[in-house]
Length: 421
Image 1 (spheres, rainbow, N blue to C red):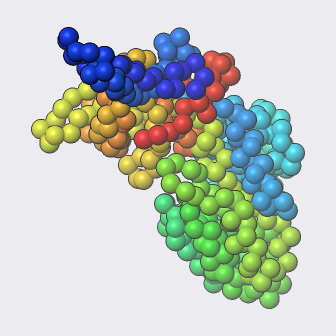
Image 2 (image 1 turned 30 degrees about the horizontal axis):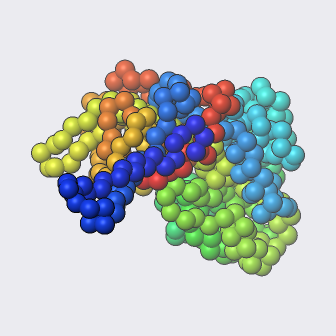
């Protein structure tokens, strides 16, 4: 480990001394071993980063995005900005060949325009949009919009432009941590009616969209979704609607503490059925968010308090928590953790309950088994906090949201700190 003592073993000879005994009567010395948890010296830059902090490694966003591009070589891969709109990620992704972005608001469009992304590389997949946001997107060159209601047809048609529109459908979500089928999406018969209405109002209905749910660990769910939309696709084409676009949505999972399928696994499941389910689909859209952003950022927190409670649990209080952007933890996202200590301590598995700094009872995280005893002033690195952390933090109770730092500015290689608990 860079700048660290990886194996702090103290070996002490402890011979048995027998006074007045002849050398032949003395027992040979028996070494004993005391193995301690690896230390990170106080001069290491991980101690210099002000906490709470999100340390970002932008090259990982590029690598993750390109991995999805390679798995789906014929697809339009639109990075979902809501997962992490920090410029440290947007800028390098924007420079990737054939990169696109998926947006849900005027602010997201304008942020992309500021870094030189034109509207012809943006698709707007929020099915329900404010009229002023549509107007802004059109002004910046966006021409591809999702919808799933009559009122949305009215809003889009009001601009008297042949905008391309695609209807959001509800699909199965087996294997997803968060289903997304209630807030948005329509059944097949409704989808066909909406596309006919859109055509009658001067819009260009070009396809269909779905979302299998966030953090989906079952590749076959994408195939199930395609089979669910197939009847509507066939009915629409029979009605003379020339469909050529299918939006497979997001759901690409990130690695936290358990195994997840790779983008190639999803691609294999999709490729088995896509030809028969949506014939004529020449354009495929993808909306990866978490699968691109999660591994780009790690959160560095400091232990500010320790307390034993009547139920026997020992609690560790940190300078960041749920309101620092870790709002997904109560719903099932569990980042791996690496304790950081500066002095040698014996290995000793200890269970802690983690909590944030605020006085709100909601601000609790998860139970963690640490390989050594932890103290006030020690630090924790929470791995893969790049998705849905930046942007949702709140200065609730007067505690600051995490500052964002690029790993290079602190000469940090965050891969040095593997999650172990």
